[in-house]
Amino acid sequence: MATPAKQMQGDIHDNDDTALAKAVGDAIKLTEVKRALPELRALCQRKIDAQDSFREAVKAVAEKAGMNAQALSAYVTAVVRGKEDEHHERARQLDLLFEEFDD
Image 1 (cartoon, rainbow, N blue to C red):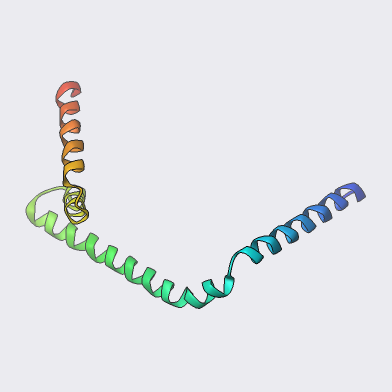
Image 2 (cartoon, rainbow, N blue to C red):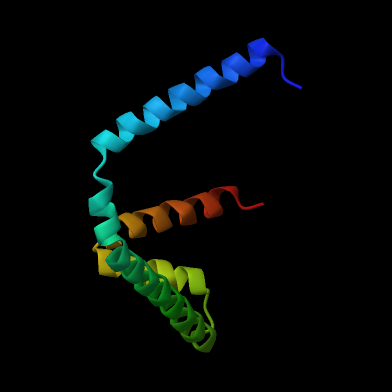
């Protein structure tokens, strides 16, 4: 059983939490979030579905091509995002490290 001092301390923290929640609630427009939630949930589900479809397609192509699916995925993603140069440089440096330090 909690001592009176511990109980009072708990009550103070509960009051602090309530005050904080009210302050945050006053600053955040929860009605806007509530209004947008159905659309956000639908968009999130489409994103998840698209990621799953992409992953399965990459896996199938990589198997047929006899290559690593992660490498194919990274390549396609880099090209689509316009980051070929960054990925090419990273691959070059990784290759250099393997050449130099491969035991």
